[in-house]
Image (tube, rainbow, N blue to C red; front, top):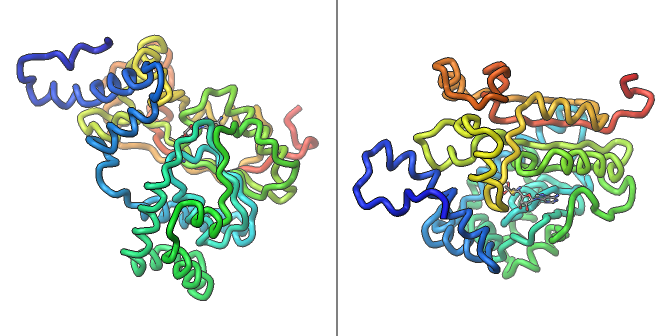
Length: 335
Ligand SMILES: C[S@@+](CC[C@H](N)C(=O)[O-])C[C@H]1O[C@@H](n2cnc3c(N)ncnc32)[C@H](O)[C@@H]1O
């Protein structure tokens, strides 16, 4: 078993406890992934008992992000109302598709390589709609008129099960399904979207997903991908920074994270820029967020693995990338 930290008998010092946290999580993920069967069920059970999922989830953060994205799309001239959507990488919940529905989107297809969706988590979002209706209404009002929003909120509040929710919101969940090969007709989608998914997918598959987007997008269609290149272990373990994983070479990192629960490609923002160029995407908007704590660590001689050492600190410390693009027309391709 990797990382014998679990076997320590002595009480570790505070710094050791902090630094153990992410390694403990990594060890649990590897243990679950190595089970002969029921890997996801085991990991989900642990998260429900001891992890973030032991509390009812709060969907409002995702709905705030949805409204922000819808507003940004409008800023570049793309209207969500009636748009046919393809979401890449559903995960366990449908808060992003549900948010897009409330903003006026048309039918939404959401695909995932793994059937992770959980009916009980979907119903937690419905419960939140009932419980915090006024607060949630305020989140959506900047993006959708009350005359459209209120009847939808009324209907969603009556929903009794996950299947009814999907029908009402016109969400078509497909899993297992590969976003690189959707089987959807050409030009049948107006928006290809993902949220914190691209960092979990190997580069060659990302190229195939962007190219599949180019095939299924209508002539006025756009792709919008919100990417989180930070070390995801830093989300739970505040003792490490968002660039902590850049200390490991590829073999060391694969040992910790090459499994279905932890995989992270560690691509930096410039790698994504190169990928978009390679896939002939015309960039309509590109937002980066640089993490100041990571920048500070890098300026204080953070021990980088050799293949990150030549990369400027601002590039390494970019922890959010949001790319809005559309397929370039062949005559615009660089010669
Ligand atoms: C971190 S989850 C993101 C979930 C969701 N977007 C959210 O923000 O809650 C990434 C998801 O992408 C899925 N995924 C990975 N490769 C994929 C592919 N080729 N096609 C579709 N989904 C994929 C994974 O199975 C996983 O459920």
